[in-house]
Image 1 (cartoon, rainbow, N blue to C red):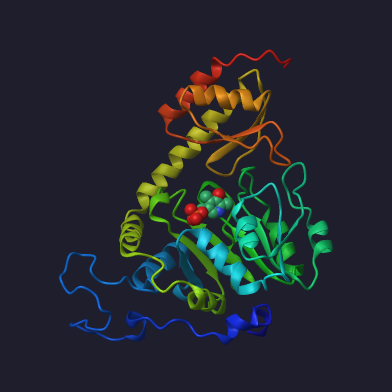
Image 2: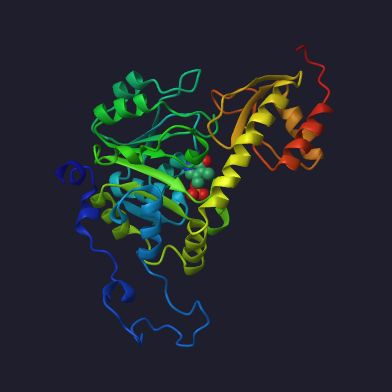
Length: 349
Ligand SMILES: *Cc1c(COP(=O)(O)O)cnc(C)c1O
């Protein structure tokens, strides 16, 4: 598709992928003498499937997409890095990010010597779509939207996303790491209509599998082929593929956990609002709360002394005075509130 091809770096279009032993072979075999592996079966002596076929078939059903619309990465962070390397010419091209937002877009761009153009979110953490479109030029290759957004917690309205899909000429990434905690539909529904859309999701949050490092990118098959071409051949190890398959065979566990987090989020929000030094608990469609308060640093240190770690976002533009709290178990949240009730502030309320 020309629409996609003209956005891709020339060297990426021209290169051929590494052909690993297992990716060259198709069909049924019983004796594997092709990959210099150890022949003694210990469950992990074979290289994993480089294209994770079984896993993608399961994910395709769960996410209602085709297997050829799925890329799997060593965390979504790998997909972010590879997308920047596929579409952005170092020293020339740029990405657009919408701060306050997830820090990895900036880090991956910097690593690739790709310029970062920032268009801050509005005071209520929505996108200033006009301003984004004003900043676009022929070097703007990728626009990163995070929805629900980290660290603010809110959904970006679908109408804003579709407006940008209609008018932004480059690739548009919607990072949906927290989508399972939101009532808003996933943008995967828009993939058929918008071939320049890439949706990122992850096993790190709702699925409770941050330790296995597994991220998903959903996109047009041509974009998936490009990601497969540039990825390390065996980027998803066997332990990870097995753990993810097990999780997909037990979706109920995820559903139950998400439900609990949502109940706890409501409880925590109410309890935080009752504290006299809390100024504002921002609306959240994710598994965390952004909370504006008097003396955030003092509160942070006080929590630390009580062996509780929050995330200090108070120096982040747009998040002045804010700490970010991940929703924990009922017992953890209760402990947080109990400790916070003992925090004394001299500041006027
Ligand atoms: C946590 C998070 C991710 C997940 O990254 P992984 O590499 O898949 O663990 C992605 N995007 C955002 C915005 C996040 O907050």
